[in-house]
Length: 219
Image 1 (tube, rainbow, N blue to C red):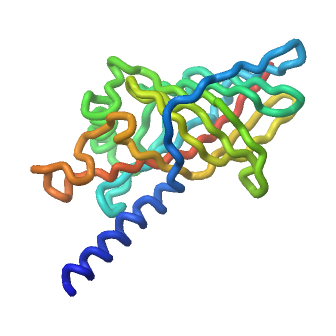
Image 2: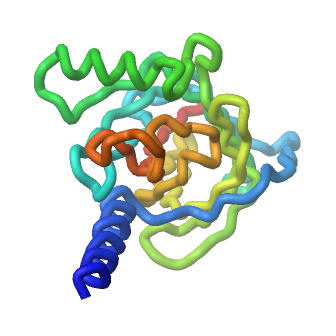
Image 3: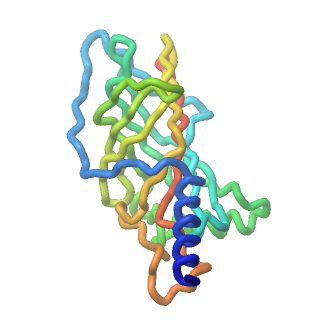
């Protein structure tokens, strides 16, 4: 009975961790990118200063949450007949911030660790990339279902998530739902769940939560 109670409790904790970070996204192999461009295509490429990727992670069970932002290095959106058809964004991994700590020493320590070879290896892979491969209109606050190739380190996988897209003459704004990926799909395996020889308190959840908030201008 004690074993059953422990197992159920552990399952609830793990599920709660995923929910806190966002909705789990579908992950498949990379898909082909088709560029849709003609004389009437509107190109948005100037990054608004408020654009960013918000990230969130935690230790096992959702404890010790960590979060921060990453800025964009490059971005381009193509709009045809007032519909987004192509999008590519490159993240500047050296811009990664940590915002859950108040003291600068802890912020700096975790930032350097995340940028080290244990995680994102920014000296070798200074950017990460997302490129749209398909988009579908849906009902609700998030009016679009976006599928695209996410490249982290040397690995590219297709992910799908929902987003709200607003298009005007001079600007396109894209804000996603909170969603999560399993980092092990991109060979981010430092202290993953179940790693032998590592104390439970040092194990890090396999899920990373993201929220995309991007605004691009065409002038």
